[in-house]
Image (tube, rainbow, N blue to C red; front, side):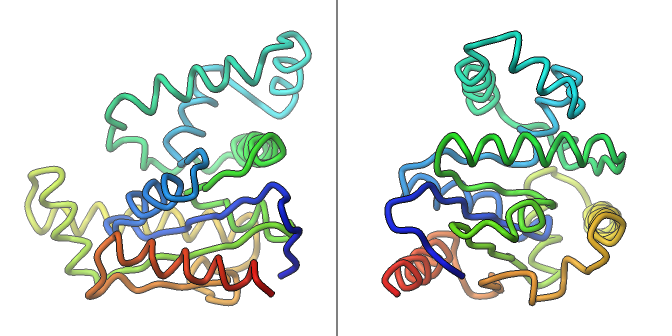
Length: 213
């Protein structure tokens, strides 16, 4: 990985549902002093504005202040609790194209942390990027979902299995690889025995290391 000193950067967080990866990404962004964008935001934008690739460009062309409007929408979403349904996997090619364009535009504007299934794909050829995959033991994931949703063990396990399958299918369809292939990432963390703050410390340590080379 080639780092450009003082240039804009993007750190992507791919994570298993129930691993705590979303919280890790948010805490990491806070420590770095940059924006945090997750899948819920991107899906929210595409649903809110009905954005295809062509419509994104049309939207930007018509609104000189599109970035300010985007950030206003981001702020609105970020101050509310994201619905669990935001984990729904959308598999249309149009969504993938729109998602890619939105993420690339975000990173072109400012440094950021991006959490979502396609981040490591979108930025894999970007020189100022780092990709992280966050995993956790299945039972830990189940317990986390049970607590968050107040549901049974069986219900939580079923949700995890469905989301895992959907995300893997999505990656295989658009990238001909597996999200579990560690070669797709610069850093892979297993949250077993790690708190979210400790995970952030590990990521920050690695980030500082590669920036010092």
